[in-house]
Amino acid sequence: AQSVTQLDSQVPVFEEAPVELRCNYSSSVSVYLFWYVQYPNQGLQLLLKYLSGSTLVESINGFEAEFNKSQTSFHLRKPSVHISDTAEYFCAVSELGSNTGKLIFGQGTTLQVKP
Amino acid sequence: EAQVTQNPRYLITVTGKKLTVTCSQNMNHEYMSWYRQDPGLGLRQIYYSMNVEVTDKGDVPEGYKVSRKEKRNFPLILESPSPNQTSLYFCASRKGGNGRADEQYFGPGTRLTVT
Image (cartoon, rainbow over all chains, first blue to last red; front, side):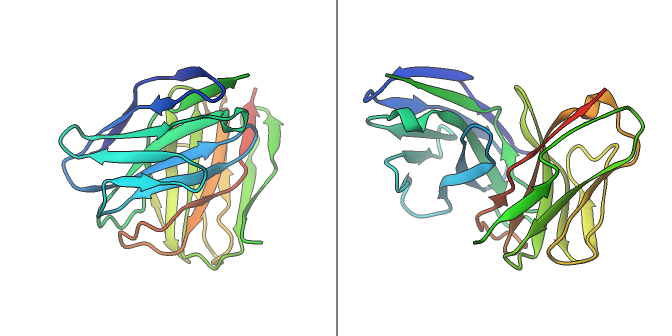
C-alpha cells in the first residue's frame, strides 16, 4: 500500500519570495509521482509529474519538483511566487503498472501568497 | 473544449433521500473515477471504471453506487445519504488504464451537504 504525507498544511509566503512545499511518500513498489493544484472553487489541474528519467521535472509556470528516491520525497519548489499562485497543492502517487489508475493523495498544502 | 462536467455543483439534501451526481467527459476516455475530498484527508477514491460496464470499488465505497452504461457518463448514486457523506466530490477521467500514467482530468466538483 502507498501513502503520501505533505508535511505542511499551510505555507504563508510573501510575493516574489521562494517557496518549497514538502511531500514524502511510502510505497513497497515503484510509483509515478504527481503534483496537482486546486485554485479556489475549481477542480484539480496537473502541475507536473515524474514518470522516469531526469529526477528534476518542471512545469510551464515556473514550478519544479525533484524526485529523491533515497529519501522518498518529491518536494515542489518555485524561486519566486506570485499572488496568482495562491491555491491548494496536492502531492499524489500512482503505482507503476497498476490497473486501477488510483491516485493516492496527500492531505494538501495551502499556499498563501501575501503582497 | 476537452472537459469533465459535473452536476449539480452544489446540493443540500436530507438524510435518506436518494440522489445522483452526474459526470460526463467529452474526451472519449476509457477510465473514469470518483473521489471525495475532506479537510485534512486529501482526496480518496470511491469507485472507478476501466470501461463501459466495468466498475470496481476504491478505498471508500460504502454508501455509494456507480454505473457505466455509456463511455462518456459515470454517475455517482447515493441511495440513502447520511451526514457523514457531506463532502466535496470530484469526478475524473483519463485516456486508458493498465498502469498508464496519463494525466487525469478533474471535474469542477460537487459540494454535497446532507442534514
